[in-house]
Structures are given as C-alpha cells and as structure tokens.
Length: 141
Image (cartoon, rainbow, N blue to C red):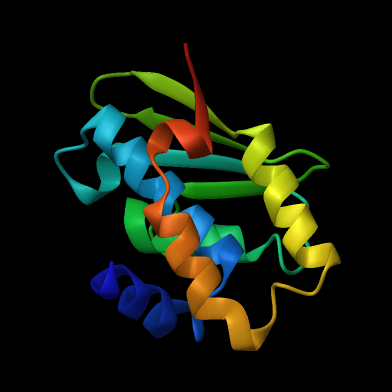
C-alpha cells in the first residue's frame, strides 16, 4: 500500500480519493486483460472533466501504463464515470463501472468536508484497502 501511495504522490503531486480510485481501476483492468507489453492496453475513460474527478485519469495512467504520451488513453467529458479497456493483442474488452455504494460514500465524504488535504492519506488508504468487488462492476464485451 505504501508503494502505491508513493507512486500516486510522485506522479499526481499529492494523494487523494479520486487519484487512488483511478489507480485501483487501472490495476484491476490490467489484472483482467493481462497485457504483455505496455502498449497492449488501450483505455477510453468517461468522466466529469473537472477536479476532483479528473484526478481519476492520473491514477489510471500510473497503474495501467495507458498514458497520454503513449497515445493509448483517451477521455471524454461525461456525467457518468466509466472506464473502457481493451487488450489490443487479444481483442478482449471490458467496461468497468464504479459501484454506487462507493460513489455514495465518496459523495458523503466530499459533502461533509472529509476529503481535504489533511485527510488525503486516510482516504487514499481507504480506497486502496477495498476489494475489487467493493469498488467495481465489470461488464465484459
């Protein structure tokens, strides 16, 4: 967990709930699609393109190897948060959605000012400690 926190801080500049959630999403996609090389994975992310939600993109770049520089991540502004991943070598595709319960808990934390710079590490640890089943719904295609 500490290694993940360090990676998030180094790339993103600080920790936070949305960067941690993106980090976990990228790891989950890699575990399901099993890319052999860095460019085997392609990501298309739908997200409200404003902070703090946009921090989700940094987390995905850290853990999935899908980056703007390699041109294997795209994003579009959306009211929903959805992550589409494809293994270019196997043509296997998945859609990952965040579970409503997690989104409700994050919304509660944000509305009650529990997502502040002071609580960033605690919120990051909270996301990193969740199981994949607690965080995600997978839709294979």
